Image (cartoon, rainbow, N blue to C red; front, side, top):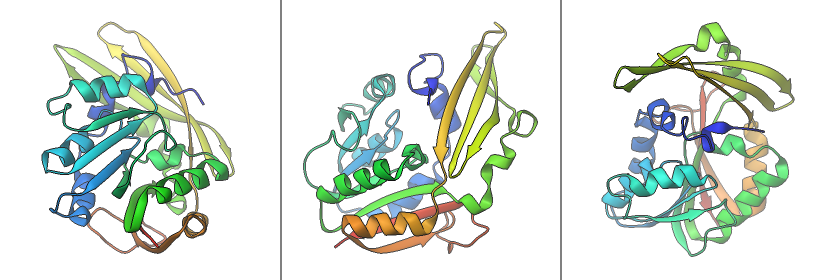
Length: 244
């Protein structure tokens, strides 16, 4: 997998524009609560949610494997509040009350081994009753059917008269994995950058099996950011797993 979003400095600023909504943040905040907790944000990206939680009084550690993302996180207002760690689920230390993985980062765990290792690492750092919250796109909703150049085309305003037009195109379907490319055309310069990515659309049963094997007990599932029940037609599969 080659995803320049995490390395090319021209694309890193687009991350926040593409993830400008906060409905997922509000969903997780409601379940975290107001009492100060120790929280680890895995795959924290540019640190928007980690800083938001830290401003609310939580002790937050943000973990991400991309140095360019953490550079943005440190530089943003409030970026001095969380602790930032470069790496994956093996890189962070300490004990936590809550672990979160937002922005569909869970779908970057492409193999059973990677998923199970992450579950094991998170569980090892949660006390009993601690919670692991994350979301993945529901494979039954087949989001990739809309990843065509025509259907996915959009224009983002970069300010100063600059824009970028981007679109997705599926390159291959391989079981639960979808390989696709994203084309970025910067305007008015006309420069084009193409990044290739792979995401896994794991089924609910497999995720539950892995969570239980890692030592999680109850798993509450939701199908949308309003807290609705998960159904076959839900676009999201949102999990809140409790450590035994």
